[in-house]
Length: 242
Ligand SMILES: [Zn+2]
Image 1: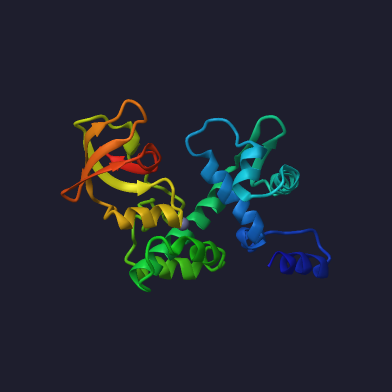
Image 2: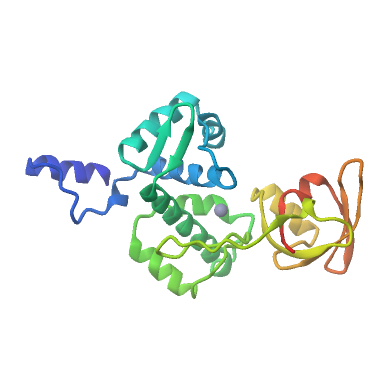
């Protein structure tokens, strides 16, 4: 789509005028993935995202990341300073949130309407999120009756890019005697979600901490009227609303 725009500009042989051109239409699929990665890595940190963190997340070389960041900076989607890392500009953030919105809406669609399980949807949504039709996203949102959260408990941004952040903490931060409701998962990998399924743990359930081991921080929890012991790895991947 980016080529189309370039071609139109060249054919008319005039100065590029972006009036009426959908800005997002000029962002390629891999550029979208970069914006999304920066958006996710930016959560919870105040500095810029490092090139190494980007390379790790996108499973690519740091040099490829640098090249792409320069490209995105030229398009004014990111601010990139070599030793300070990268941050999103306002329009970069908007684009990232649009992708996140589509991703999460598709995940809801797949679970609610096509009977996918919550561990199957992420990879499919990774593909569907790149379909560039504002109408499709809008109609999908309406069809699903404006869901607020995706199947993993993550909030869905609205069409204007507003995101409702709810107060949450990791289960691992809770102490004996405390409880809360499971509102999301940090690790959305299929393996982790299957582990939760196997143990009858799902969104919305109340979890109580019955005991915590000083040695390895494993916990004895009560969930769904059942007591079970979970490792620190598990408790540090579950979000709780106290
Ligand atoms: Zn996902």
